[in-house]
Length: 71
Image (cartoon, rainbow, N blue to C red; front, side):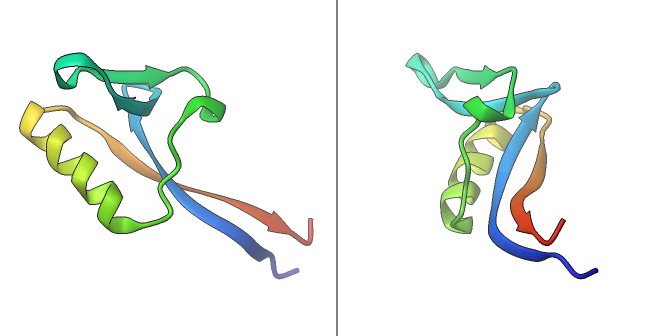
């Protein structure tokens, strides 16, 4: 059965936690659960965050998340 993707976004995973935002002095704030993560639907906003993380020397993964129908 083919799944229909209704919503597709990306999240950033850092040390088994999800990126939320930058805090004071560009400190990295993370969440334990996907519900607290920042979802990126537009690549240029994601690239801005990834550039800052690269400058800070952080190791991260970018994951695709989505809502599907047809289960």
